[in-house]
Image (tube, rainbow, N blue to C red; front, side, top):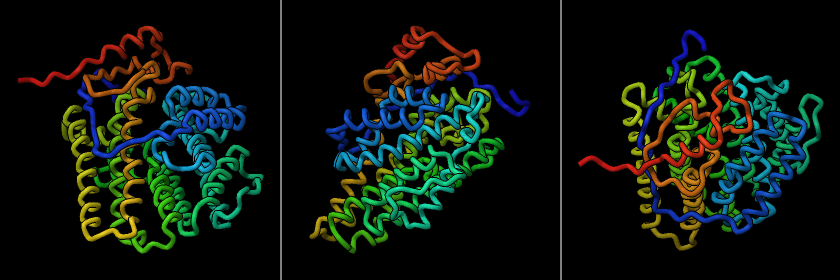
Length: 393
């Protein structure tokens, strides 16, 4: 532990059940999509030991359910390319983050793959996303080109405008992750104020990519609709992305707190940013307020727009797709073991949560964690100890 690091104490917080008025829906082919993605990833990433562990963890976390909740209306063939990109990008991000946190040996370039992904994306952008297969570059590992090929396939199903939107959004996310990595490496998270953090977070969580895909689904249905060039759509997208990012910060807090147990001051999470000026519980509560504020502002813009009339149905269609993103993302946060421990089942409806660094192993049970391992049985019992919150009189 470095001299500037701060060890994380055991804390207990009340994690509320955030709700939203939008319906969520799981794609009817979810199980097929997940099975295909696991098979594809095992084949593509099979030579990388770090990834084999992460792939097992992602499968346990129901990670493909997240995509199938965002896009319950996409065709299975489109979900295949989106699923490959999502799987690969999540594996890259998780494995490199775990290597950073635990100081584990890395597979050469593997500890920092995003710059290579950015290079591959630049090659694809030169082709304006038109190629369905990217010619392998001697500078790029095959694993990178396969990820870029998945992006090319996503672009191949998009409209011309949607393709440009998609490539720009993916580039922004990659650039944001590179910046976040630099912040983590230099332990400068404490230099981020709330505004700077929110701007960064909306890039690094990657939701603008999926918002672009949702909008293009409407664009393909309503060719050249003027409503899709209305500046209000940009605002709807902004608050959609903000809601999704903040919900992730809230429900991933427990996991991130325990993973960053020896460097809390460099933790890049909204709750940690807010905690500088308030208690942990106050920071949690403030995060919840910001989530609901994003929802209110989204609804205000949408309703005012609809009141002007929507004869073609474009506004209703695109807003419904954005609302699937908001609701699906939020629902996933409540059911995934990724944020509630590998032995978690069911749906989280709020409760008192213990954040104990000794519990880290419940999130990565297949990977040795520097003396912090806890038995599966003990971890399971701890997960069952969540108690309902009883407000004081």
